[in-house]
Image (cartoon, rainbow, N blue to C red; front, side):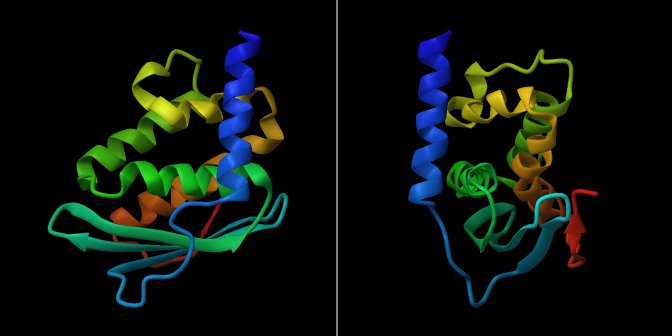
Length: 148
């Protein structure tokens, strides 16, 4: 179990140091701003759609290592995925972070690195900020989302 925790920790640190898909999409179809008032994490999510697929997705913002890593991992995973697949993934991540712990980590691949956050309730909102922004963007909302 300690090896698994160490692997997860390394994934989080890697995505925080070198976030994937960091930046803006000038002709994005959806732009959603998100904020976590509890710790000050702020992000803007840019989504470019091609039919029902996420053609491109980027984010920018400031925040803690968990927030940046979660945004990086999320964009890496959903780029090229369908809207339906991405919404299903949102549900799995939400269950992993806030549910009864019965979410299948095997299906989440690198996203399972976020499972350790569950042990720190004050950090759950840091990890879920990007995911709530994704859900709002895919639903067509342009309003700022908040984890509060």
